[in-house]
Image 1: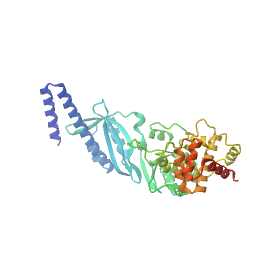
Image 2: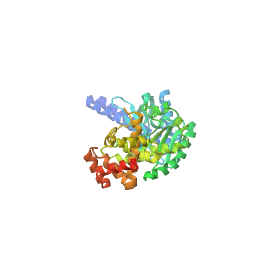
Image 3: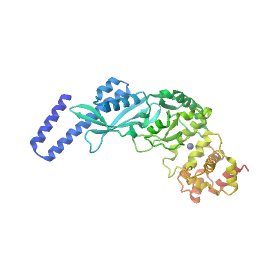
Length: 403
Ligand SMILES: [Zn+2]
């Protein structure tokens, strides 16, 4: 095979010289380039299979490397990704336009127990010399901020699969991984309160430090509130995946004790209800947080403050405004934020107590599809619950005021 391809390159080269025609030369160059791309794809395909099979020798044989950078890049990909439980794994290789021999290499696949099948695990921009069926990786042009992105953040990865969770972190953080995996059982029991959750697992990544977490998000985490959160699943397809992943800053677990279960239940609610809002016009934060607050089930909001607000005519943060607010946090005092969360929880709890858990998703979707005007909300509650907005509002108010 190698010999045949080498001969082909020579023949093409001769034909181009003899033809003395720029178009011919360009065409032959692009044929050579196309065969180099094909060879590169074949080599990375073999390497992906070897990584999946945890066969380091086959991996090295598929992708010879020259120079420290290239060797390190390939070694890092192998060391950080091969220990993970892949059902399928591939390297998607795309030429970088304008740079001969430079390729975007995306590591992606499906982890056992958790979708999607095109989950992004890592990305590298590698320089490759290819020709005559020989492919050698000769350089790494990956910008620093993306080197340890996604699952490449873990130096010595460990994956635990338990209680419908796939918990991934570093071996050295095993204690934290175990604590999350164990909390999965109680968290799932809490999810049953709203009949959410399914056989489909959720990936929870556990980070040793803020800088490791930051690296996993290519530096995109700067908010100190980001300690325990649900986020969209990175995948090759531009369409959002129907579940979120959950990220945990390990050191935060130390002081949590038994409340790990509650915090995990809150984030799993976000992970499992994201698909309720994929096709709706909006995804009201108040509803998202209301669902999660009912599931985590502490009722830790200041209900006295909410009662006071409602007795005062709900002027500080009217329910319809709160539903239309995208970010409940920015620009608001802790008191206001607390009020919004208490409002959110009471709203979801009210719908469940009056209309049952089955009414919750249609209600959330109808409200999310409205324009939050009085007429829009009226249409939403009529369509989903069979009552107008004013009756709904009065009922909610009574449920909060306890009269
Ligand atoms: Zn939340």
